Length: 467
Image 1 (cartoon, helix red, strand yellow):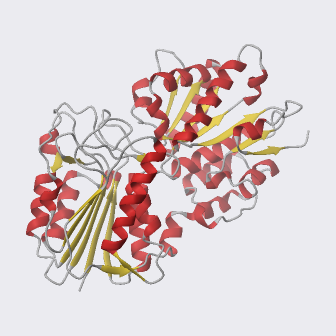
Image 2 (image 1 turned 45 degrees about the vertical axis):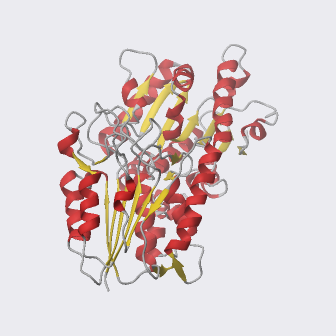
Image 3 (image 1 turned 180 degrees about the horizontal axis):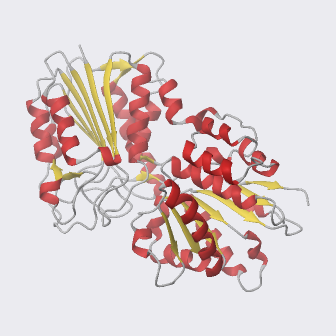
């Protein structure tokens, strides 16, 4: 028997009008590496972002479901957007030509039905209903179609696990950057000691997704169709070399002042080389403490109180680049338009021009890329306090796509004029945690005397540098 698996995850889309996601590639990568680490005979392929073109996804269907023999088992996983008329959105999908640049679920179901494979497990972590921040193309020019029935996939030896029913949205977990369905799979398929009975495990997955959705204040009801007589057992998933290579932060490694050590935690070499040439003396003590003791590169939130010119702004840059490397979108908030423009010019020259990181700014100026910000078509965004507050009030769902907020000049909370804006912004971020929306928060502050339990209010640790 051959176990054939295709894992497809798409966060970034070629068409500027298609909203980017934050967890689809992470979903596909996590399952690909966990299955590859755990099953020696697995014949698996991972396809993400620009690789996941229409032609490539169609090839994956033919190569797995289409070419499987009667002794083969197939796993087909897809995470990304669906459309309201039940198509799977590919990297090169054109929103003006959806019919010819997407994968119809009906043709997918035909592969599913006609495959000669002994057993098939198909997992769709996308949806065909709802609006942002669900995994659906909400601005599709094609009207919603309510005729799809996912049970058309049902059959002996066939299991379809869908993140939600055809008329429900499917969500991502903002802080963990996974779809609710995939996160439940990752957790539950690692719990057994030896082998997993998939039909039994699926019942627990369905319950876990419903419970997590309730914490977000939404309804998401995953569905499972099909049967496999005698069940389908696979080795329990165990994280190994491939998984830790893809997610090095899971090992909690420590680094020295040498920038080259940052490769241990997954920072790309091009960024390391740029920093090494720019900061020849390496990381300073404040930055090392933030990394090694306060684990900012592992997604931990932190309040840094330190004098001007102590290197605390670079603490925010370190966290931002690590977040971007993991597929999380990062935001820098600054008090004045002039500071945003100055930092934008620096970041543009260092990160976009040289390293291909998408940098945008929003200050209320005519040069703003507001539409890019709302659609998540950025990696690093710089905004004034007021501009970000306006976005949060008018489009609160944008916070679901944000993985990190660096709040510079946090001492402005004590300012008699600007303090109310700072407090409102931070209160908005803190209250979002009650809905399980919990981006990493790095607050950078000049020395403000008595911290006055600022860190406790932020619900994070504090790093105080000596004067």
